[in-house]
Amino acid sequence: MKVTAIIDDKIIEEAMKYSNASTITDALKVALKSYINLQKIKELGQLIKDKPMKFNHSAEKIRNTNRER
Image (cartoon, rainbow, N blue to C red; front, top):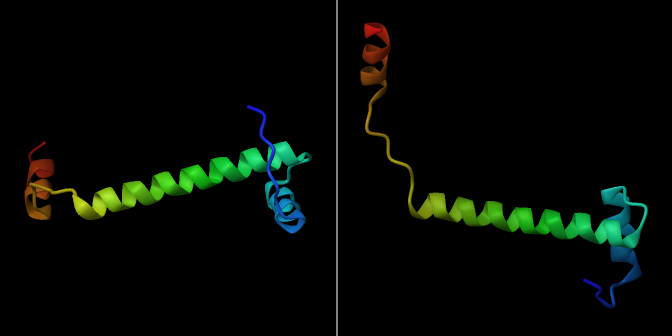
């Protein structure tokens, strides 16, 4: 997709520096992918916070099961 955007030169320079990209397009791709991944991690963190995993076994029960094998 071709997009025209007005972005401050300093932001572009930083994006290129931290992404080690040789073109603005590559730098923006890296930046957008990183942003999207960060948002997905935040969503997952919130999901875990809202619905934490429940463990049905105690440490003692797991140890006993392992000893039986």
